[in-house]
Length: 466
Image 1 (cartoon, helix red, strand yellow):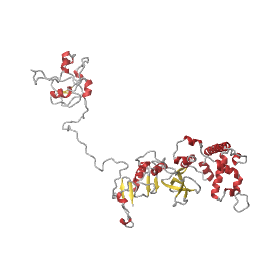
Image 2 (cartoon, helix red, strand yellow):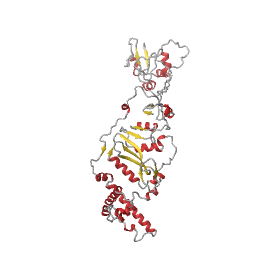
Image 3 (spheres, one colour):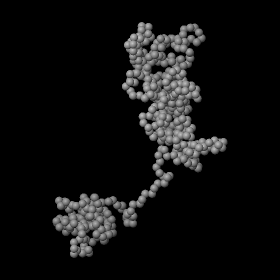
Image 4 (cartoon, helix red, strand yellow):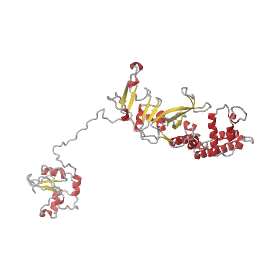
């Protein structure tokens, strides 16, 4: 047959020997049981009169469509082997017939364009430069600010919170108090208080310490309505300050008499509620494995969790929020008391708080009860105590575009990058001995700068200025 044979959509070979050595040598042996169909199904021919290879198989002469004999099958199977002695190299060779099943194994995709002239070798990869290499959160390559500088508005997160402010329309103090201390939680406090009063009575009875004149012997179960009155008296004591509790129930006709206290609750009942007020079952503590910090807050943790949830549901924060610690004054004996001389209260219970910068609304708080002992050493900087507090307090505000303001006790370049990845902007003072602070600013002193001079460095989305 005059023409070239193309097998498996590959480029036409230069010689017939190339066809034999290139395709049939790698063909798996055929089983004698396999019947070879007509060659017109498996080959594509391009004649000299046809400049392009036809995508439709050309019909062969009818004599070639007869059933193959055993000699033909053997010739196909032995094609490509060494020629026997006496055979001429110029002898016409018959192109192999490759079954369609095995053509799929030999087939490789090629482009429709001419592939001549393309190199057959693999081009080695060019190594990435230092400016193109992948970076991690702890890669801080500090450089000078670009000129002209990038506008801060183009780098700031977009604030997407709508309807900021209170979620309730009421402005009455009583309605707001009821919205925070709802009846369901007050009934929970009443049940825990009644449980603890029963436990105290049983313990005193078992120890032969319960007498007819004991105050606890007059106990009757409290209710949510009575606890509302009790909390109201507590709030009143914060407005009218006296030195002793008995003075609030004093009936002496003097200038400082407060008849409203005795009109709503007797002194003995108030003291009984003071003694038995409880928020959690003490027996549950034995079944839990708590560390020192968790054990100290075990009895009030339900109140902390409930108030945090209520504060978050009743208010939507504006764009600017602040993170700082506060000190609730308490001069009595308490294991978690803190002494902070630069605070107004000086001595009291320390809390970490997230507040709105504009109104000072308390959105979430966490009581400080000493640092937790880590279970295992970790190289993650964000797992240390201070960054972990920040991430816990802002949980639930991610990807809303808030700007977090904090002081140098919390701020660090590593934390700032983490906050940026969570959709926060952060602003605050920075201690120069923090990790990843540029060395040029770490060694900077007041003698190196003129009055009014500002210098700084940038690393991607983090800017540090002095």
